[in-house]
Length: 144
Image (cartoon, rainbow, N blue to C red; front, side, top):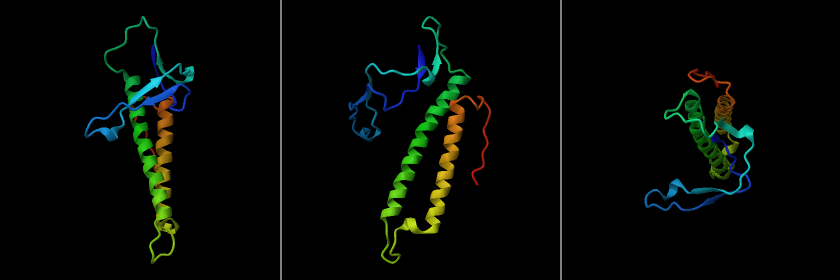
């Protein structure tokens, strides 16, 4: 018994689009099917023998993993927003400028700051996932 991190592109994983509730269709809460998916031991978050009772409350390790997993969702959203912005800046070329907005130093600086924040976020997430940040310890970082 255990908790595992499974790569979405692992062979044997498929998504069955079952979610179609009015007003919540865009949430995309479909069923994920695991068909003989091999998951290496290094992707284990927590492994316990089946006969060991599971605690009813999260311990500090569980809280840390929950924070990492939820933060990873927001990291993905932020990266998708950055990618969308890059595409929009490259395509948007005002007539009076005669070039895409991405050619302006101000927008290049902005993208650089966004990239710095995303890199900072990734380093902190990786450190927490690898256990280099102790539960209860607040990591500090300065981006600029």
